[in-house]
Figure 1 (cartoon, rainbow, N blue to C red):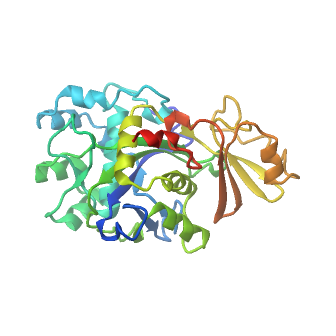
Figure 2 (tube, rainbow, N blue to C red; figure 1 turned 30 degrees about the vertical axis):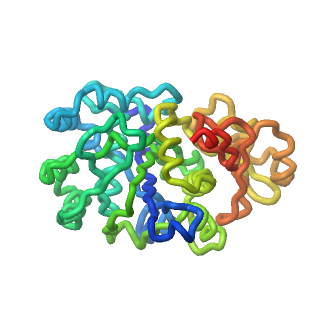
Length: 360
């Protein structure tokens, strides 16, 4: 079956991997770092940009054979079903269109895990479920021929499930936290992706094996340091990365972040598809909840009001709106973030106004 928006964009999944950094705990205000990598210049989509691991959805991710796989490892159906029980917003990417396919809330997790292994050689696994454990940290598999399997899966010579069968491991779909969902703006037309972002939290930094065709180099760094390098034009972060790193930058403790992510995990993800307005001194991308965000937006049409405020500055345009959820761009490396409404889906505040952390 052809998915509803297949001719407009591709589905994908991405993984924010955060790991405790014990080496700098006494020098940094952050006790964790984030894993990102630089895409090679040959990549068709966003070459040379700094991104989180992730990539396109594959039919193997949706295979019902995964149900048998988990069942054979004594994973109860209720544990898998719990991953599908989300109360909040569900963008179309999470819709499962056929009973012949694995539920999208599971298959997208598998996609994110597979891509993280293909690109960076990080294989997140779970040995047993500890549903009563307060904090759920992912673990990474050691002591196997990472690069051999990485290339086999990357080149299509083996399936991700075959890797886990050979190792006797299980992909850790259970300790991933649903984080957000982004759609490339309509103006990009032929290069659009709807991407489900998940968060994985590790108690130690895993070994990294960069895939040479996709990965030019990789970085472990704090959210603030990555954003500063972006502003200094040492690196270029794609827009979803700047947004996500900005709201992460206000949380310095990985345990606090884990508790928050676990509590928010089933509250859904509003689709974040930026809509552009031109201003006299730059461009503005508005997001759902902002006064300028089109009502009943179809995610396909161009913005007919693109140049409506083109003679005004970003500040003047901002002062004309009561509800703000936007990013103002001066250029590719300098953005300002504004949010004066309650964060969508009870998420982290884009400007750090996270009063609820007093309870964590």
